[in-house]
Length: 284
Length: 277
Image (cartoon, rainbow over all chains, first blue to last red; front, top):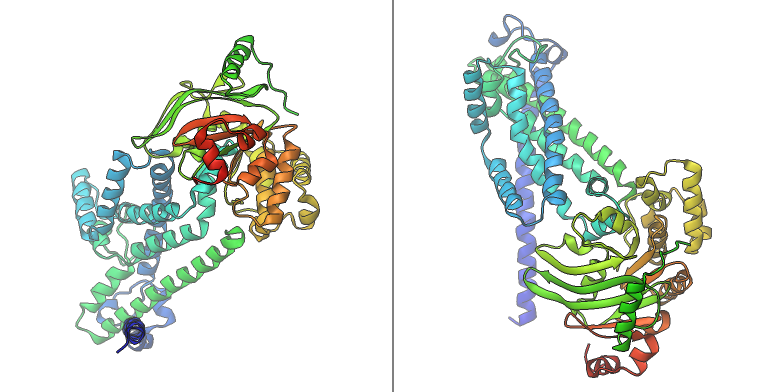
């Protein structure tokens, strides 16, 4: 085999490996979505998404999961909003204000990396012990705080990576026009705006899909969430409870709930893409 | 357009002293650098720089790659502060005011100096907003005034007729030469006194390069212009004075024809003849 033949063989092998893993992953995703659709679609009806659980819900009779849909939406939106409001300034401070490469910056970034990887049950357990100490019971607020803490590292690290992609010229150009660091930071945010939506999307996805973080802190309730200081239902927990039931109808509802959760995420993803593409007007 | 305060007698004397050493040409200094030393992460980048840069003229900084040209330029508007682990010793006086004095206001200093970077970098906004950005952050809110500034500056750089019908379209749609002129207009809109160019034509085609060079020559009646360039012919075409930097030190500073045609120093001679680069 000549040298060029070897190189071409390697090229082909690399291509097959990539195609292979692509097919496996896409295939399993289709399998997951297919299973949810196959098992959940027969149980998905208007009652399911428009009513809260009635008396016989857990034995497969009437009622729906509106409590969990609303609970999850409230929880995820509030936590994502809070995490964005807190996370963006942190990322800006670390990248624009703090001296680059300083001990503070390095330590903070390392800590955020660690926090990024900590499983949500740890956040839940810590928040729960604090809530016990303060005498607060499981509530929507408890969940919002826990999930906010869980998603802040996601926002900070994603925005930080985005800020790193900005050419140094942007800083130099704006600074030499006599901007303050805050004005330069705003221009940097403008530059990465499409990416900020991705950061928010990632945070939202983690927030709405989390079970362990809300298990201890948010509790569960069959009522529609109305107050921050009351327990609230969430979709992932609703799925978990329904799947644990021995009754096939209730298990089917678990898949229907999963389908609803998937639709919500799909809807959010589409919205994010539309919003992000509108921001690209002046993109360099 | 922007009057500079008259020089004090003391500065004139300093200038005369330097002159006798054959270092500085006769002119009104706009920027004076005294005993400047710059260290970046422990490396001594600029060594004992003493310079008086005359106003209303073009001064080019030339020298081989990595000799400290750009650092010298960025020391003038304190962009060098942005580097990791940087220490600046000595003083840089702009109109007699030390920009490295403790408590010196960086924002105000930088506003005085427009920067034209290596590659044109339009801000991610429309053509109009690019030029209006500077005046806006400095407090200009009146739309008529802003329109006036945008038109004047775009005319100044000869871009108005090319873009007047698409001021709202994205600045990135312009050709690279147009973008560089837009960047110049954006810099001029904040009324600087000094224009700093960091190899500003290196990304441009020959025709755009010529346009920018001619603009700079036209602008020197109103501004003090300092350019970093590695193209000797460009330095010869546009500049009145040349600073030759080698290994972080100023080897020669003088009128363009003196430095390029009759360099006094042997290293300058070798550089000008192309033996070192």
